[in-house]
Each structure stands twice: as structure tokens, then as C-alpha cells.
Image (tube, helix red, strand yellow):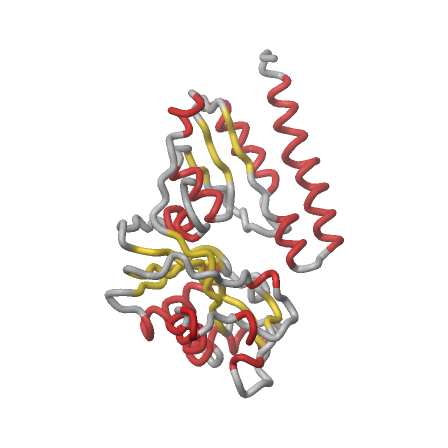
Length: 270
């Protein structure tokens, strides 16, 4: 087992170099209902806050860092709704619920529990709601008919990852192409070259042509193995967007697989 939890891998992707005594937590910006008085009675409406933009999310994460960050805990901006909390000597064994598994449900029974070591996590999540619910970014999003990122949801803790070198293990020069921090982090920790593609988003509206072009360029530059990751079908599945899931798969076929396959067929290799 090289790593427990996705958060440490995502941390590496966004440039955090964890110490051995630090724990990383995935820190989603989520949308909770606002009609209930008690935090526990709120409904989780969206695990991605309407796929909030990274620029908007950055302002919200910075607000959390200003109010709650200290020498022990620090908040870092990732991409879209996916962010990171680094906690010195934090509990890396706590069993959190994944937010995308409970869409439409009352959050009370899925929150960290005070009687099993989750009290500090619960307080941070509750405090985040009070900090974010009236933030100017969220007020502006509501005015545009978008869901606010009015709370964080912590999950998937882990310590500093220890991955072997892909080149040492397989003898191949490898490249990873992804807009998702988890996949990029895995590649970086394994010594792969990570390529960022302009306009790559992690959802159905991504730069398919750009990913294909980047893959072909990687081969031309000497890569033996290229891992192209497209998050669109998965993200559409979480959001129950059947038509968009089908569309994203069709676009992967036509705009990525076809041109890359045709390039490889023209290289003269088996």
C-alpha cells in the first residue's frame, strides 16, 4: 500500500510538500440547504457547488485560511471544488463519509461524530458554513442562479505518499495528462511528467482536442507511455446528468481516442 486516501496525492499535485507528521484531508466546497436552523438538519444539494470555478473557490478557501488557519492547520486551494486541508499530527484514520454518496440527504447522520474523535472535524465544518454562507462570492453566485459553496466537507485523509518510480518499475518514460489533482498527484509522485492542458476542466466541458494534441506531442517528445485522464463521465455520473455522460464518452472517442490512435498507427511501430 503506497498511500491511504487521495488527499496527500492531490496535495503533491498543487505543490504542497508534506512533512512526515502532517495529514492531508480532501476539503470539498459543497452546497448545503439553508432553510434549516441546525447545521445537522441541512441537506447536501451538490458535492461540487455547481462545479464552482477555481477563481471563486480560491477566494472562499482564502477566507477559511484567514479565519481558521494557524500553525497546526492550513487550507490550500486546488481546482474547482476540490481543495486541501493540511493538519500537523492530524488523525489520518478517521472514517469520513464521501459527500458525493449522500446527495439529497440530511447530513446529520453522516457528519463526523463527537464521541469517536470527530469533534474537531465537525467544528471546522460547522464554522466553515458561518464563514462562507454570506461571503460576497456566494452572494454573487446566487444572483446568477448558481449554487453557493457554503460549507466544506472533509474526507479521505492520508499521510505523505510513498510511490515507487514508474521508470524504475517498468522501464518506461511516462507522461500523465489530467485536470484532476488526484491523477496528477499520482503521476508526479511516481516520477511521471505531468502536462497541463489549457481549457481542461475536469467536467464534460473540457478541451478534448487539447488533450489529444498533448498526448501526441508527448509521444513525439519521447514518452513511451501516456496516461490521458478525462473526468467528464465520472463527474456527470455524480450529478446524474445522463445525457452529458453519454456526450462526454462520445467526445472522448471522437476527439481523443481517434486522433491518438491514428497518430500511433502512422508511426511505423507495431
